[in-house]
Length: 138
Length: 350
Image 1 (cartoon, rainbow over the protein chains, first blue to last red):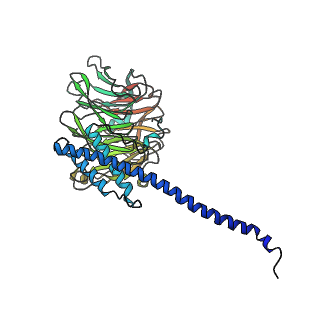
Image 2 (image 1 turned 135 degrees about the vertical axis):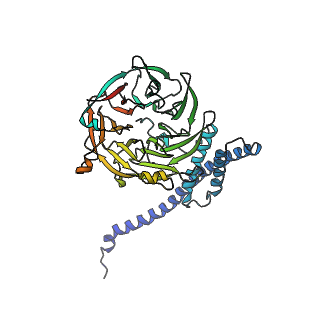
Image 3 (image 1 turned 30 degrees about the horizontal axis):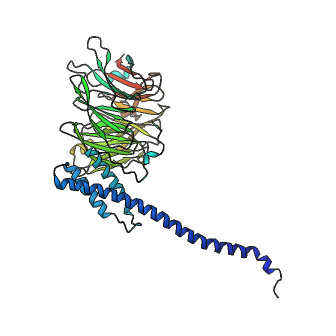
C-alpha cells in the first residue's frame, strides 16, 4: 500500500528536478544565442583587422609594382611576409591553434613596416594594451 | 688592484645642478678624457631635457655646455653615445628615441625613431656602432640598423619578455644583445641566421639562480666574459660564460650563475657598472654608492668571490638612479639621482 504522504515527501525533489530541467533548457537556448553573438563579434573583429592589413599590403605592393625600389629590401621582405601571413590565416577554422600566433606576427610586421616607412597608421579596431594603467611611470 | 685592499676613498669632486627634475641616467662620451680632449658626459631627466657637461681643462670643473630640449615631450629616461662619440641616442617616455649629432659643438636632432607603443626605457649601441637597441614598457625590444645619412631602419622587433623591459645592453665585443625586465629575467638575443633572424637564445630566470624581482641593470667586464646584474631583490648577481667558446663564434656559449652578492643592500639596486680595472659600483634607493672588488683571498680560503671595497653613505639626498665610471685614465665615477643633481667622484687610494 502506498504511503499517502509519499507525494508530499517528494515534493521538494520533484520541484528541484522541474526547475533544473527548465533552467537547463533555457540555458541551452540563451547560451547558444550568446555564443552566436560573441562569435559574430569576434569574427567581425578578426575579419576587419585582417582586411585592414590586406588593404595596406595591397597598397604597398602596388607602389612596389610602379617603382620596385621605392622601399628598402628589408621592408619589401616584411611586406611579403605580411602577405603570406594573411593568406595563411585560417579564417574558416577558428579553433586552429595557430590563429593567435599568426595575428601576433602580423601585428609585429605591420609595426615594423610602419616604423621603417615613417608612417603613422593606427589600426583602431582592437583595443590597445596601452590603455590600461596609463599613469604608472617608473 | 693590490692598492685597493689597503683602503681608499671616494671623494666628491663636484655636484652639478641644472636639471629641474630627477636625473634618470647619464653616459660618458667614450671619445673624451684622453689625448687632451676634455671629459664630456650627457645626462637625462624627468624635466624632458638632456644636458651635455664638459670639463674645463684649466679649472678641472664641469660646466653645462648644452641643453637639448624641445624635442622630447616627456621624461628622457636613458641616453647612450655611439662608440665614436659622434652621436647621442636618447630614449624617452614620449615613445620615441632621438639621435643627436654633434655639429661643431651644437647638438642637432638628426633622426627620430618611432615604433614603440609607449614609454621607451633604455637605448644601447653595439660595439661597432652599426646597430642600436631600444626597449620599453610595451615589453618589446627593437633592433635598428644605422644607414647612410643618419637613417635608421628597424631590423627586428623582439618579443619574449612578459613585462616592462628595463634595460638593453649590447655585449662589449660581440653582436649579442642582453635585456632585463620587470618579469625578473634577463634575456640573451642573437642573430641566428643571416637574414635578420634575431632570436632569444637564453633566458636567465629564477630557475637558473636568477633574480626574484625586477632586474634593473646589467654591466659587463672589459673582456665580456662576466656580467653583473642588479635587482629589486636587493642582490647583485654575477654571471659567467666560457670566453674561449664565445670568441670562437661557432656556437653560443651559455651564461651561468657564478655568485650572488647578498646582504649588502637593503633597498632596490637601480644601477651597476663595472670599471675597466674591475671595480664594480652600485647605486641604490638607499642613497648610497657601494664599490666591490674581486676577493683575492677567495681562491685560498674559498671565501666570497667579491667583497665590499667601500660604502659611501648619503652620496645623494635621494635614490641613486645611475652610476657610471668614466673612460680615460682617471678613476672618475658619476652618479645621477632623484634629488636632481649629478655628482662626479674620484676614487683615491689612501
